[in-house]
Amino acid sequence: FRVWVKLRAAHMEGGEGRYYYNLPNVPYVMYFENEDIPGWRGYGIHGAYWHNDFGAAHSHGCINLPVNIAEKLYYWSMPDLQAQSPSVFASNTNPGTRIIIHK
Image (tube, rainbow, N blue to C red; front, side, top):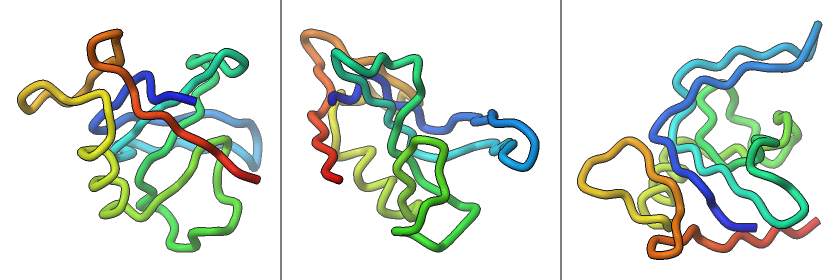
C-alpha cells in the first residue's frame, strides 16, 4: 500500500444500526491504497480519541493509534506537507510512504 492523502482531521461516519459511527475531528488521518484496494474504500491510519484499547478490534477498516503516536507518524510520513497545510495528496514528485500490513 501507499499513503495517497494525509488530512490533519476528518469527519468519519458510516455503518448501520448498532454498527453506526459518527466521529468528528478524527486526527492525523493517512488514507492508503494499492492496485487491489482503491482509495475510495477509506482504509487508513489515524489517531483514536474514543477508546484506549489498542490492539483489540475497534475499527471499520482503519488502523487506530493513540493520538500522540498518530501525530508523530503523520508528520514523519510522506507525502510531505507544504508549509502548515492541513492536507496533502501524494504525487509523482511527492509520493506517499509505503505501508506493509501483516496478519
